[in-house]
Length: 257
Image (cartoon, rainbow, N blue to C red; front, side, top):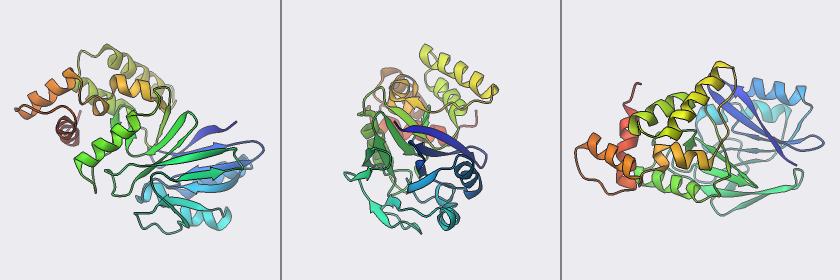
């Protein structure tokens, strides 16, 4: 059975580690080498692969240093140039990980970056900076339409899927979401829980896709309440879906809480 655990990095990053018995592990988005190396050594784990979702430094910056001491194949998006990747992958590919007893399916998730990918296993999804708990990544290299389509692709996974994102942004994301949907009672309860978790020093991730579908405005761009909020913000009639997403994403970009 595979277990997932977080290694905190920088100020708000999570490097995810997939573990199985006796010691095989997969490291996801190692932006910082030192805390990952410490975790591997302390727990006597042996990396059998590294998985990269996109090229940003806070996701790949520790890779070269880790490979020197913990060599293993590196899977990463074929559409992005990342030093160290020797197994380029794209949506539709399947990654066999026999040491962990599972296969991972690759999803193309462009928007945050041009070649961003995600990895889906039994009951979980490693989504990088595409989908956050209560939010989504900024659109840097792709288009708003691409990002919305990527989120819709994730929304098609089973509702019980656990969503493993790469940042602890949840409280701020949910506060923004309440500005969009102030009458969403599930959202208000979720924010209270996230605040309590952070005050206790606990992470707020993973979430479930069901949580996101009920409370994340970026997955609710056809919900009447989100459409109405986007239309009020933009001052025009919008087609539910990608047009609403573009307004909400732009609103969040300029939001300061």
